[in-house]
Image (cartoon, rainbow, N blue to C red):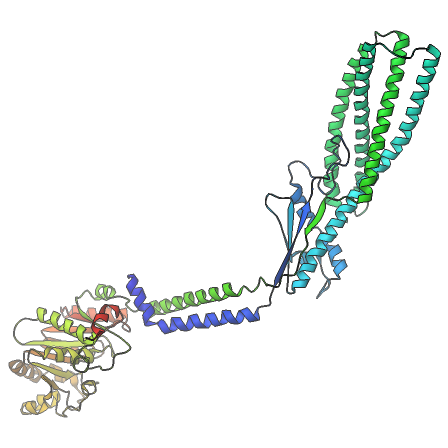
Length: 611
């Protein structure tokens, strides 16, 4: 089948297609008003990495909410924390959310949310859907607020622990500073030595710097061990896995374990450097060596105390400022435009579905009927030549179009059939029998119009031998004489009285009704009758009953020089075509085909124009 054949099927059932499309489109429009509206609001959180270090000199005690292990993404970790049950439970508690079963479950609330990372930024976008625009915005803002509060709470816990540890260290270090100063003063008064030589002073300074770094490392190591102890204690508490900060504490503890390992390695390296520097100062005189030791202890004690005091003040500021790494950068606002239903999309989809459904139905119906969908399919089934095609159009006014509508495309198509028939028939009188596969295919219409067209240039007579359902009179639009073929067969003298004249065309109707048309068709009188007509007429066209339905049509085949089978492409079944082929093959006859009611009307537009 070609594209045109498919197009013809669509044109044939166009009203079904239009109806399907209209119904589906109306359903889509109705759905736009019936489907509950769903609104979506979104807000953004900024996860800042500027507050990760709580100690100077690269101290690795990071913000709990940002700590992560190995190659994990901190932002992804924060997004997963947003989905945890404790945070969702807190939102449910604040908003007093309920469901049909009672208090809303976290899983049900989570279904309303969606989260995603904003590409190439430290932003997390939170979205919520609800049938109320204000509710959607409220849910997002409450969730972000709870998350930020938890973030600050965890940071405060860590800062407080570190500050308390530094405070205890300051008390101990202050005592050491005072003790070192008293020892140095007492030594100077006793020995009367106030200063050292240049080389000894340089060695003391180098040793003091290394020792200070060593003590600072020990301090950081102790702080990290203290943090490790704190988190192990929190994680060891009963029902700690249900705590909102459980997953954050696990990640922080693993990070601190890595920090402790690094500080231990640094401690060992500093110990080795201190041993080397200490060996350089062994050659100093005993009294100077004692003074070196006292000066070194005083300098180291002062520097450690100053560093601890500075760190303590820093923690006090951070604790008062309630530093957190998560901030609400864009609060959610109600979105008055619903995301569901998307009216334009819904109507377009309904329209497209209507077209698809209509096409599926009409092609399905066509193929289930077993109808031929193209002239090539008819030719392939029958194996005979097509004499011509008669187009169909809804605007056709007269079935006797060869006379009453000579400029129509049907009349022009009939003239083309007439031309093809002339080439096929031999000179002299010829008998053409016209039949069909089933009733209603238009064989009488074709026989009448073909006979009238041919009568313009030769003597033609049209015989109505459809003895079962004669319809020529109705087709011609006139009252035919009661005397017909049957009457002439019974009395040949009645031949002249049986002929009806329509312009140059002569017509004989069936005549009286008989109960044995098969015997009439077989009789010698029928042969004699046809021989008589051949004397007076150049072309005799016989309109017979459908060959698949009655036996007399098969008997009349013996009288014809050529047989034409009218095939209505819009209604004939392939099974009927195959049955017709079997009948003609049994008699070794090759008929011609006229395809009726063909829908390819564009080819005939030219003939509809008036001049």
